Amino acid sequence: MTVLRDEGLSLQELAVWRALQRAQVRVTRHLEAELLVAHDLPLASYDVLMQLAEAPERRLRMNDLADRVLLSRSGLTRLIDRLQRDGLVAREACASDARGLFAVLTDEGEVRLAEATPTYLGGVRSQFLDHLDPGDLRQCRAMLAKLGLMAES
Image (cartoon, rainbow, N blue to C red):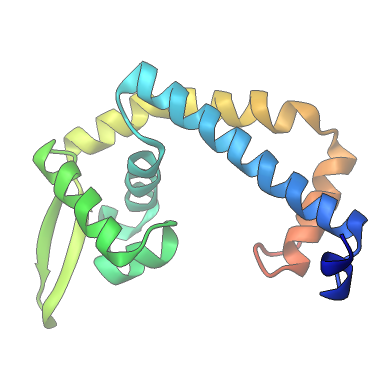
């Protein structure tokens, strides 16, 4: 493993990085499986519906939505196509920019999100939060704030 050390990572640093990756994949796979079984809703679809539900007027410009979810712009376009076919999302033209499009959460999308949210939150709790005490959560929040991933409070 001298190659890794030569690149400036100790074995301990690399082990922490890999464990973080594995933890994220494990939790994500669990959430994906639970949402698919219980609601026939992939995790990426849930994320899009949640982002739209939290946005003013339940709408976001496609570019802004792409920045908030972990999908490429083309991947988001394909996902929005599927969600639109399922009646969960609608597309609307932007009045101030003829090229701009909004993704808008439909009433049916809001219902589907509400049905899936207890499953999602239960998975987050059982796969992540239940393993941490309040001190762990404070440390985790502080570390994520150092990485610029959340506000420290």
